[in-house]
Image (cartoon, rainbow over all chains, first blue to last red):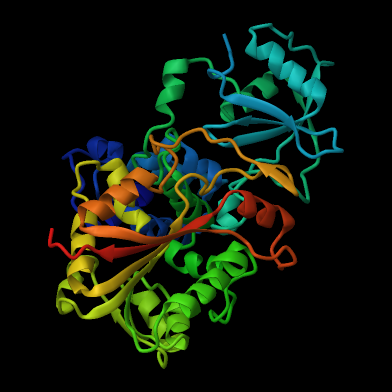
Length: 84
Length: 391
């Protein structure tokens, strides 16, 4: 996992609300919707923001994967899209 | 072993003269097009007959399932593409099994299957089917990436916003309300349009001679209402129902609510947070307070039985399958008993009742929509009057 993508994704969520957990691993495991960091309408904004920031396009399958729901999983998807 | 989920799956020919059969899970409202041989293959799998995954053993499928309500609330809610069907595909038996499981036409675990029908925990929850509003929200926000607020306007009105679209809104709801306003509203009556949206019906009531105040919690809708119909009525952004406290007691002849009361029975956020208090009693008591003694509450709401059920059968002879009425795992409209009990408990009597059906068959709306709405009313209209005795 590239540090700058992860840092950028974590910083995005932390700008909304503190991510529970002290270690990087705990933050990566955080489910940002369940944790209430963003709500339903914030989801559109989040998706658009990451697509623009990293010049990627999430597919329907990406968004339907359990990976998409955690900060670490989302970061991995962004990285795969960037290298793909 | 794979099997049929309970007896939840039906098979029927798509149209009278076609060779295409459709399998549907009547609770999940999923559909798959098959040849009659494909239906036989499904039938063998559901009975536990193993079909060898031989390279020459192929099953022809037509993937016609899609989320039809994304096109509009009054489009055919049967999740079947009826035109521009995708080309049939040949699948291996193992691919066929996977597709049947994805569409809940076969399952391997009945306990897990029943859990699929619970409320969604979030918009990224794909395991639980959730109710209609959750499915619609997920489709619009995550898959189409449009805000439900702006989508709602375009699915109901033409671009000008002064005409309803040529679906059942334009063929049934609009003309029936025009007739109702002209028959039952008195010139000069003072009307409060609660949940007025972009002000379409506020304007029509004003044209019938009423003095209308339209209120809605959405500043976006009220902005549109002021721009489009500002000369006809007064529009205000108002938190509902708390904001109604600003109106004086016994100050309106009529309160009008269309396609909005249902949200007070099944609020979107309460489905996944069942402990949230219902605002319905406060709304109804506030309406009773602001209505004059001889005042009228007019409700136009989706019909409790038929809203959002598939329009199956032939276009001119449709039928539907009712898989739930009380449980509301999918449904979002109160039952008759919930609706009437709420009104009675709030001190109202029912003075007038009508199920809305199309008057004419040569409308611009599709034949299937008109035939369905003629047999199964999509809306009902209720007049409730405050009882003279205080509650």
